Image 1 (spheres, rainbow, N blue to C red):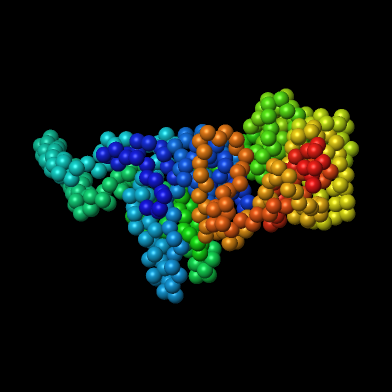
Image 2 (cartoon, rainbow, N blue to C red; image 1 turned 90 degrees about the vertical axis):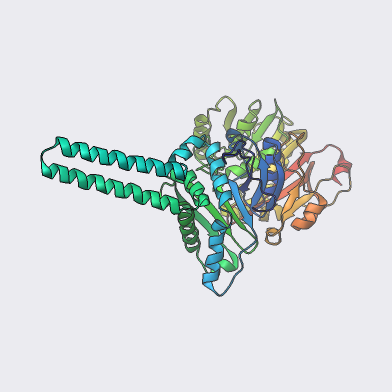
Length: 515
């Protein structure tokens, strides 16, 4: 098994008796710090480490707790993590190495599949397995007994039935059944004990599967993802007797191969964690919205404003996690407000979130009445530079006006907008870091994060200096200030084809703290 991977505890029969397991989540680029912090705080996870786009951890949390992860895209049981495959001009050798991913340690496959079934309340009982493939000696005695019974049955029929055609027909039928049983018995006796155990686990369930494969780097130049998936699928069918089903499988095998690692896992849930049940119409990606709310320091009884609420995704993410808060969403577009209203109504949060038509540069609110501001600043289609960017100073001025002293502003800004912000340095107390991860260089870095079970805050934590060196993170001590709003931390995240920054500001009253 891979280094650091835990196998589920077993009893003598091989069945799982505990649900502590090794998992990994996929995450959008730049979301790894948020996910690391969340799995520790929400699940009490241990052995937390990451590569670009994936966070690995060990936990014994129950299924309903695993489903509450908000910053992850998908959740997988980790079957194995290997070094990258060696690339050879001999395709046959590469195919052999790919097949070894299945054949090298078949017991780990069965352990993880059994654990997956246990998580979903489908654990097989040992007596059912014994019924499928009983002891060989006992099976042979039963076969001999069946043969004797069938001979006696044929004799009885021959004595009581006078029609010769009926007798001959019955004899042919019984002889065929005897040959079938004996053939099955010989086939069974020829199997090795290990293969019997493997087939006993899966054949009893009528298992079918499909392989989802991602392939990148040098390996992708020789094989497509479909070819890789086909090779692994054939190996699974030969090793375990599973049946391929591309449309509606019982289980999915996820394989990711690149120049840095090979990861194999089983999705815990059919739907991605990022697909929220309480969001009817999606706007901003839910994981990004959650990341913004998680660092906003929202407290019970606070007043939270989204001045560019759109379809209300950010407010929905916040209200589902912190219900004892007053939420207000404003937008200049009536169609967006209508969409937000539909989402809020479908989520059953009408009593938590109010909506109001207003411009972000002229909010109909008294000064210093808001504790937290959350906003996705939508300047230009697809975050392109437009003439509307000249309104950015007016936006900051209005947010500064309505925000209480010590209040928090969390903004999602395009790279272009972020570059337009005034910059400066500060040496005062409480200075925070500006963080951006160089994901191209960090793909091969497994960065461990120390766990603190006492911490309850789910906001992301800056990694230690040693972890930063391993992950090749770029740290800048600079921070920016706009009026009394001081930038205390920022995270570069991916929005698909574009990049953006999640920026956290605090409103300070001490002028020296802004210098």
